[in-house]
Length: 88
Image 1 (cartoon, rainbow, N blue to C red):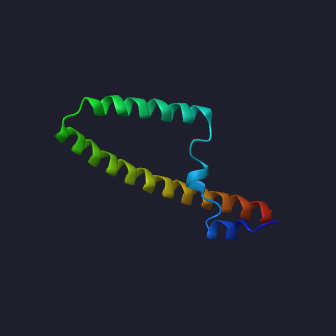
Image 2: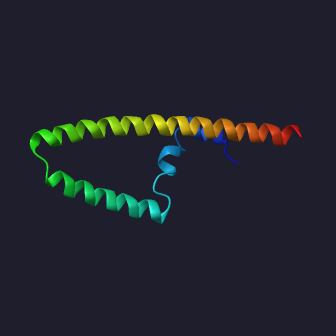
Image 3: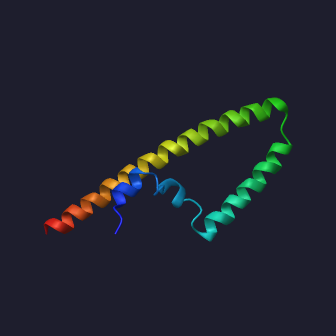
């Protein structure tokens, strides 16, 4: 059996990529979002495109920070469950 910690360390397990778009609902939603995004951008002036791009950059950074926080919380919660299970 491979060590999960070693696999995680060596980048063979990438939770943020493995967890995205798992479900058909998520894939469908991403397709809708992409379509609406394209339709919306077609209506923008150059100035609006620049503002929207800045918004996207901020949103991407926010999502990245949120995913990291969720991963950390979930990992700690999982460890607490494991410790409780092993000590009882």
